[in-house]
Length: 264
Image 1 (cartoon, helix red, strand yellow):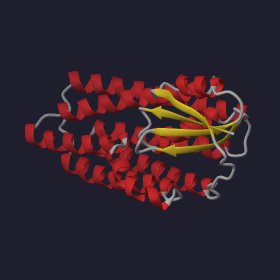
Image 2 (cartoon, helix red, strand yellow):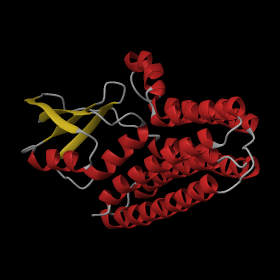
Image 3 (cartoon, rainbow, N blue to C red):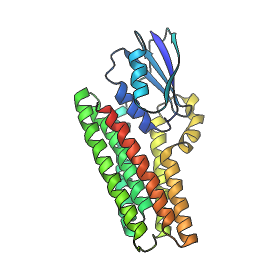
């Protein structure tokens, strides 16, 4: 048995972990994957050569780089028997906040909230693909990934068109108080999701959870929408909302391309 360690510089939340798991799922030489999200490290326990695994990790476009490969006597691993239940829980939370943020975003005329809702939907896709792929075939997984990726891109393009329409139009100011309140609840929801997905880890890693939560892109987006809401009120301008909306739509498209890589 060999143990290879990778540094994954763009792995900052469980969404990336699920994408990597799905990418490596078809490689028969892999025995176990151990993720250290706060330190952006992945340890792969495998037999045979590392070349195929290394190539798959690099192809993900998450800044993957092999650090070391060494022999190990470890043969027993703690498996997450509640994987399906955990995925279903976080899928439910993310999809619920997609509906909440989309609805309140339309009501408050905030593109920042609408964009964040689509980002929540993107996370739902990732967890959903993982959930439906548990025990399923590689072909089935790739088919679902392709549909999810193209759907995300479509939503993001519609979002960009709306940004341009509002930028050159004469829209009312977004309701900053709704932006801030809903984003605070979304922030809490993301923290809960991250905690749920990591609670099966060893107690020694418990102290890392806080740093993991605050390095998550999802949390940064929530803070961005809150900041945009404050600036909308302070400047009496919709531009901060349009800016954060644009940034999030770009992140959604980047995530969509990562998902599409799984379908190849």
